Image (spheres, rainbow, N blue to C red):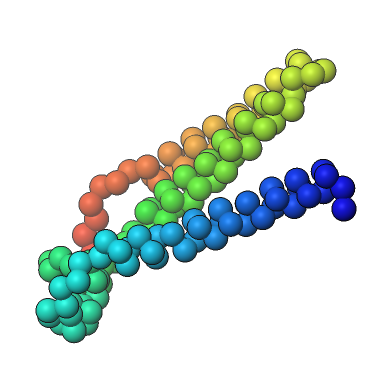
Length: 133
């Protein structure tokens, strides 16, 4: 095994150990810093939300579909913006005008999606009342 292969193997091992530390680290930290007071533990764990705070109101709430549409819009634009960075880096060495036009078309299509969602009322967060039968 050559010197370069050994260095590559050490990089992979360090990456795996770092990933393992990031996966197990939060469990160890929460174990070390969690409060040890177990009084009323059974009462607290039978609640719907176990965050240590007393719940206020009903647990079952109906969310409007607008919330989910807003979340989907955010997710789609988040992924698309992340796509723009490597594309902009790759498009710097040749057909600059053509590459710029392609990016403008891509952003234009995204803008049309925002306009469509705006017209459909996805970005309106008004409180709606629900009448139960």
